[in-house]
Amino acid sequence: MTGENKKELVVSAIDNGTVIDHIPASEVYKVVKILNLDEYQDEVLIGTNLKSKKYGTKGIIKVKNKFFEEKEVSKIALIAPNATLIVIKNYEVVEKRKLDIPDRVRNIVKCINPNCITNIEDIETDFRIVEKEPLKLQCHYCEKTMTNIRFKE
Amino acid sequence: MANLKGKNLISITDYNKEEYLQILDLAAEFEANPKQPILSDKVVASIFFEPSTRTRLSFESAANMLGARVIGFSNPAATSLQKGESLHDTIQMVSSYSDLIVMRHPRDGASRYASEVASVPVINAGDGANQHPTQCMLDLYSIRKTQGTLDNLQITMVGDLKYGRTVHSLVQAMCNFNATFHFVSPEELKMPSSVKMHIKNVGLKYFQYTNLEDVIPFSDIIYMTRIQRERFSDPLEYEKVKDCYVLDAATLKGCKPTMKVLHPLPRVNEIATDVDSTPYAYYFQQARNGVYVRQALMAAILGAK
Image: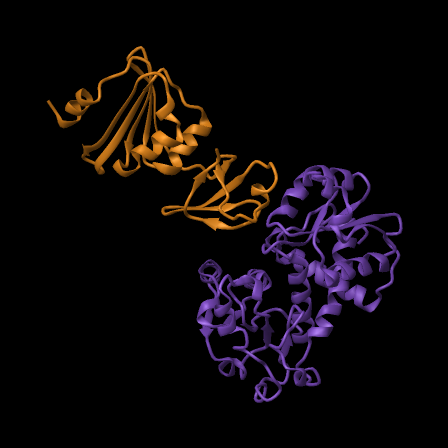
């Protein structure tokens, strides 16, 4: 039995739902938080510090009966740009995709500039991704660049 | 020739080199013949959500010289904003009364947002600490007028290079003209790395100094800035740097005969008054050039030129 198979036993399979694999181990709980999985009512399986051939260690989250919207996928991509998203229906993998940071994120991230108009008026935020590694975003409105991201509530 | 009709001007990067030059050429035309009633059928809304007498009068003077009617406010306390109206609603209302909006606002990004809400073009007359593109355009005009060209110049910037939005915009614009940049500032107020990175990325050079005397012999333009007290959270830090660069007539000894000193104004004490009577002082003419540049922008954006 390979190491990969052993891990599948540690974090058991789900019949329907989504698996987020290859999350950096340090970011697993951040992903849980931004997706509000701490309040999710169905099964959530969380594995962290699992061995990964590619990344050394990794985290994995399996969420039963949950299929993420694009906005949520963009959030995951900003935190865990190398993650893989696997959609499972009836134990079958129906979709598997490696996440990529989008070029633009709308109404997901909050501007760090307290004087930005988006923090004063009720306006949808809009950020251009200036650099993916390390992550750097620029606000479409106030033009400030930032490296630390905060998500809108 | 680019068609600027209906085009917003929010950030200096909204326009390209060809468009800058087109505006500068048009401004020269207005300098030669300022009173042309080509906008007599237009209404310009001048809406200032914070006071800025110099910029407002410059815009309103430009609009009047073109024959446009000017409506608006210079004091938001006297408007429905005091009743809690959103920027969105104010802009919608103003754009239904006018052909062009000139807007100043204390919040960063407010003008970009207004341009997305308005049904008429918007010219940004300053949004918080972010952009003031017409200042940059008048700086370009002043540089070209005094040097005869914008190409291959030695551009020196002095003072608050960290927070000064005018110097950041001017660097961005001058990167189109193969400039070499010389930055003179105290350690605490150095040019931000993002601006320096931009210069590098476009293949140009910059040099940093702490001593003003070092740059005098070779500069074509010395762009002085005011060190603003309000930028410092610690008053002691401000006291440390506030008088660090004072340009006086004696300091200018040995400069190029064609060198000009620019300043976005108001100055405090960073340019001694004895510079005013030297042939190098250009800051008051620079401010006057703002009217011609704003005439050019309004005429082009309203499709009258």
